[in-house]
Image (cartoon, rainbow, N blue to C red; front, top):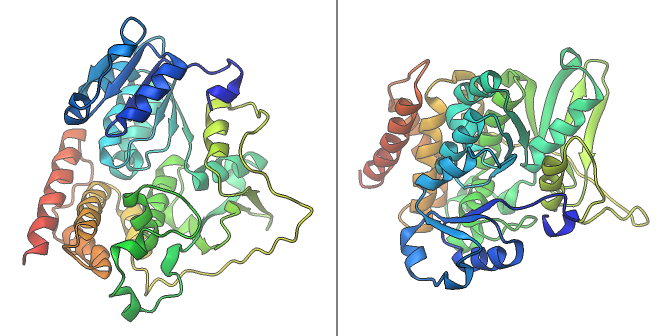
Length: 364
């Protein structure tokens, strides 16, 4: 994105956790002032001498917040997977930055706190997730009081036609074979359980200030319509594009302008068939869980997210079955002591508690 910007965008700082070789290559290409390796063990395995004199190397996650709040940083792309991304997001919003948000967990865990902080500091949050970027774009066709509901689309993952019996025998390899998107293992498994869509419901609830009963989901296998907004007059405005994350990333980085795109484009000379199906809440109970947590607010999001991250890790380690991921999350959510208005520290504690409870659940 920076390379294609013609000098409009410049990398001030770049970070990585384990992909250090790629980070060094990016540092050679874009010459940022600093790079951050959040995993000290990964940093020890690499030689940074070629960057000396051009780019400062910082090791440890603690540096994310300080760099994100620096005065020479205009836009912070928050793309760390999981609740770990909340702290950098928080620091950037606290400093009044524009945040291109690809880390949905920031709002799943701390939605009201994050949005209230943005209001106080004047920070702007621009969505990078393709679904929320689509909603953000479609919302520009009308005014807030004219919106009836938003509809998030979902590919349905690789198991959208599986029976409950088949889901009990899903392997790790099958779960990681997404039919449309190329994502990391955690998000790919979330897409297969449809927990990813549950988390997106919660994110949309806080990001757009919508009540959960105004957020719907439709299965759309082609992943061309990324989401829709229905207005009170019956009009439905949708955003369409091939499944290519470069488009929503570019839009967040260049907003409010639209620039010549580098992402794939639809070919209107070819036939295009689009399917939409209502989701099966019985086979994919994560969706019900997401709606429940969106309604509850408070501490529910932090517990659901922490439990899910731990349960997915356990599945990838082959310690639980695929069809046990969501029931484990529900059990932990049901047993936690709900807090209506938790602090950031309390949310962090509950996140850790949920992970520990998943470990106990596995061995019960």
